[in-house]
Amino acid sequence: MAAGVLLLCVGIWRWLHAEYSSAEQELQRALFSEFMHAEMRMTDTILSQKVIAPMLSDSGNFKIELETDSAISINGKQGMMHVFTNSENLVTDDKIERVKTENDSIAFAFRTDSGDAMYQGIRLFITELRGPDGMHTMLERYISADDTLLLQKYFAENLDSAQLPVTPVWIHDALTNSFPPPAFTYHAKAFDMPFGAQITYYRSYLYKKLWPQGVFSLFLLLCIITAFLLAYRSLKKQMELSAIKDDLISNISHELKTPVATVRVAIEALRTMDKEDLHKTMPRYMQMAESELDRLEMLINKVMQSASLENGIPDMRIEVFDAVALLDTFIPGMITQAQMRNATLTYSGEVPHAQIAFDVVHFRGVLYNLIDNAIKYGGEGVHIDIKGKVEHGKYILQICDSGPGIPDAYADRIFEKFFRVPQGDTHNVKGHGLGLYYIAQVLHFGKADIRYAPNGKQGSCFTIIFDITKA
Image (cartoon, rainbow, N blue to C red; front, side):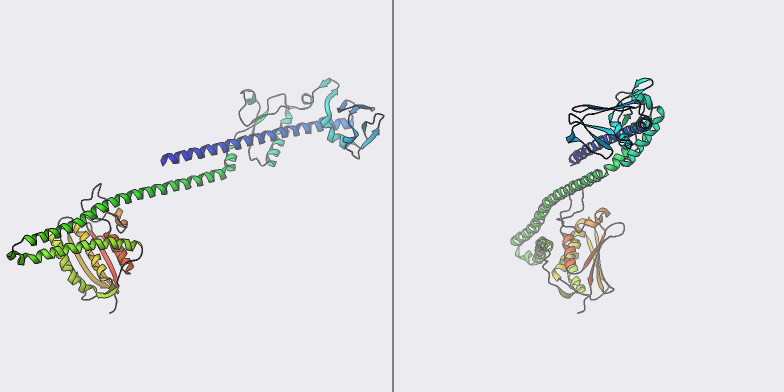
């Protein structure tokens, strides 16, 4: 499972890295486009201020050419413009005058009020400048180092208009020190000196842009990890149930064989016994056989009842009876069994009568299971104390022992089906993990309650609470 989660993390990381690289390239293209546009705006502004505006006032030193299919020359007093076009592709304007020529070509002459059209269109047609010093390129002649402020202004405006929250760092000499230049570095070609912009703090912008993918990846990773954990938990539970099943089969087989073997030995002893001794020892052997048969019946009923309780259909016959009177007849037999198993049991009741509504058979089963567990798990010489009392309209029955008790880590699970307190790889005491589950379910359906608490520093104490019913 860990390897699967690791591969998933690697796959998600590679996807996020690809998304980041794609966003980084997209940002770099957008910044390059905005930088080129800013440089073009700068050159257009310089051209308008230093070239076009002076020419409109004094156009004696410029030449404008537009080349297409054929040519017609229109000679003015101060300049010359070549216009080559066909009449089908002509775009008319109220500031432009058509001139009919002999070869049906069209020539245009700007009227005296056509300065705006010239101002807007001349940038596209300038091919050379002529001045007192001869032929010079426009960039060398008119753009200076002071115009870098104009480039910075336009680039900042473009970034703001494109909603790109990055801050450029303007550099003068680093562009010539490395080749190829670092990423997110843009060189302005309009200047005769190294000058450009470098974007350094752009990762926060990319992280904000990719946060939906990051949140989705995290959500997907959490969902898959949760699914893995649930699957692992289910698999672990199935393995535990399989081990419990094997332990249950082994323990039930032992529990079934023990009473059968005991009854067989008793019957065999009675069969081979002398008639004189038979009359004396028969009651004891018969009581032993009856006790083992009761134990066998209790085990069978417990298994059957656990199945019926799991399906929510317990076989219970609720009737009103005196719990104190039933205990007076039930406890002596349990005292005898405790003594036979090197344990002691005492019973004290503070009230003479307590009428409750419950199933009599299951009432005995509950008491038998609690006492039997105390004897089995309490160890050699365990003492069991049973007390009954009435408080606030409730009949409270306490069964406490002096055994090793239940660790706090497992106290909340003792009423689960098939649960047994771990004792390493082996269980010295045979059990099937159904006793306390059976008790809790029967009491729940009989509208009674059971609670567990440690009996001081050592031992366990179970408290059963019944409602008092008026006869």
